[in-house]
Amino acid sequence: MTEFPALIRYSIPAFLLLMAVEMASYRLLPDPDKAGYRAKDTMTSLAMGIGSELFALVLGLEYLLAYSALYWLAPVKISFEWWMLPGLLVAQDFFYYWRHRGHHVIRWFWASHVVHHSSRHFNLSTAVRHSWFSPGGWIFYAPLVLIGFHPAAVLFCHSLNLLYQFWLHTERIGKLARPIEFLLVTPSHHRVHHGSQGGYLDRNFGGILIIWDRMFGSYAEEIEVPRYGLTKDIRTFNPVRVAFHEWAALARDLWRAPTWADRGRYLVNRPGWAPETPRERPADVPR
Image 1: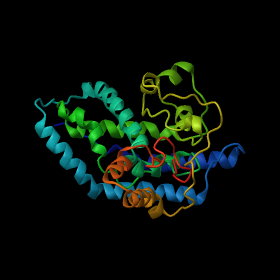
Image 2: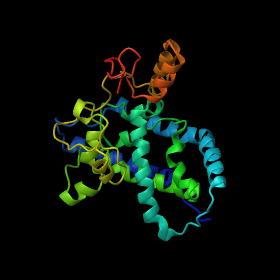
Image 3: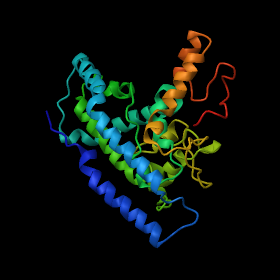
């Protein structure tokens, strides 16, 4: 079996250096129209990133057990060679699109992914603002493992995907050449994704390729300046509250739900769903 490097952990020094460069750029070339950096917000993002790596050492056991079982069930085992990497990366990016979309439109998954969208700033530190755990998220790559790709190869492609996405979290890069904007996810596309105004909500889920959004009707062009963060700001820089606030809200809704059927709907419906108004998003539910 091919050995795969721990890309994200090896890249941490580069992440920190690039953040410092971007911070310096705002000092040297300030732009009143850009949110830039705020010390408390940046520290929260870094705390979430560090926590994500630490929790992965323990909570990654869920993914290990799930993928080991699925790989054992796979009727064919594909012996990975490095020349397969481009094809597998495209396949992984396709399933990443659905994984990302699922983490926005299914409240169970949104409870963890909301962390990444909780900042009202958009800079390179936002790229490391990850949830500390994402229970059940392994399900989206299950097809790749079941057809015979080793879980380590699939997760390596996932790391490559996340590595690519780091540079997308910036306001310092405008729109790029039209062919690039048509094919690849760019900072412009990802700014839209982090926008909280109506026309930008639940758009541009792609990781590397934007073509999935164009194909499946979730693409939006950057026209107006995005308003970053959630539809209702959580007003905290406390990493523990950032990590668990939506899980707590979900638990309250499950407790108060009038029927078991409604409890199930709370888990799988969009964030903001409620039994009284199933087609609307209450104003007090952050998105």
